[in-house]
Image 1 (cartoon, rainbow, N blue to C red):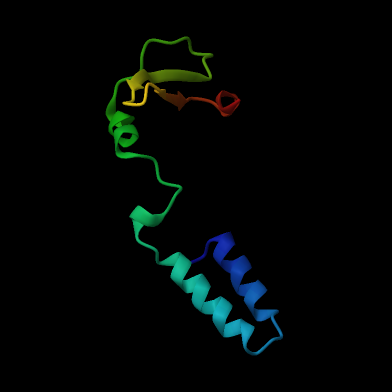
Image 2 (cartoon, one colour):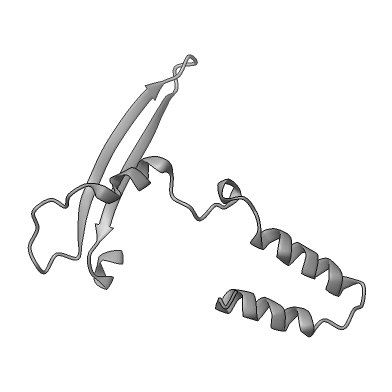
Length: 99
């Protein structure tokens, strides 16, 4: 594991002077590194992963990002309230496409 985050954690843990706190933090760090993939919040949903192989729509060569999916769903609940689910997936083509 040569990631910057992991190396930073090791440096932080080495600097702890409390003999009881160091092993506890080491254990917590190891537990966080080996969480199952389903428990990690950074992963995209499966419906978004399915769009990886979708061909890109026609676009100008200076385009920063293209819209791959635009989906709006309205659900009327039993108590009369409405719920709106909005899905948007963009393919970022250039660094400026993030903004």
